[in-house]
Image (cartoon, rainbow, N blue to C red):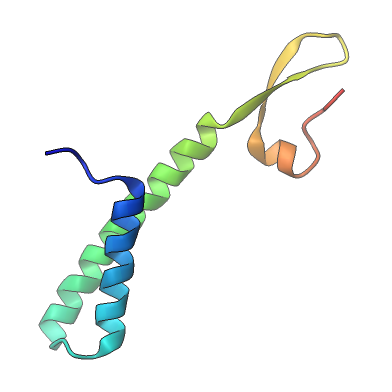
Length: 82
């Protein structure tokens, strides 16, 4: 059996949120669901951070040398596009 995808994990967390909002669970079940959801959210945030680090673009500096520029710098206009 393969590991669930990011999207499948996110859908699972969304389902937990719906269950918690529904108000049909007892306190113990709500606490267990909340803990499970938060654990999965932390993992999802970690995966997003890793993906962001991988997303770099090659830009050329003024000297013509290729330079890796993080996507954050490109998005904010600090990518040194020549």
